[in-house]
Image 1 (cartoon, rainbow, N blue to C red):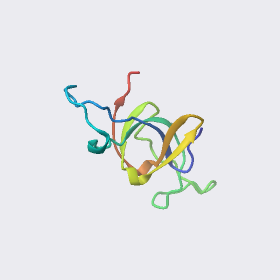
Image 2: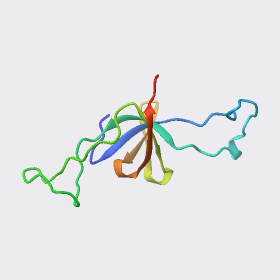
Image 3: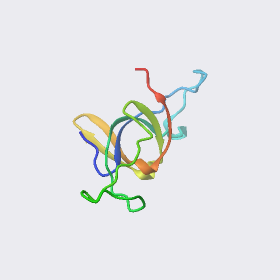
Length: 106
């Protein structure tokens, strides 16, 4: 699967059932959803009205602050859930990403 039009494809990271100390079980209705995911693919180009555009393609290339394998945070209202076979993925526009952490060491 390939990201298009300034989007990023993420594999969501589910919140665990235990507290950080590992002592208490947290029931589903009390869980605070953690909206973060691992970057699977990044679109290289996006239409951008605010920067100088390439006169031949009409598009501009924006710098990527994230790369494949990074863990990013996003708002659930900016994400679209999709399926690729049995795999659940999320598509978010690059501009809507909130923060990035170090690459996962998996």
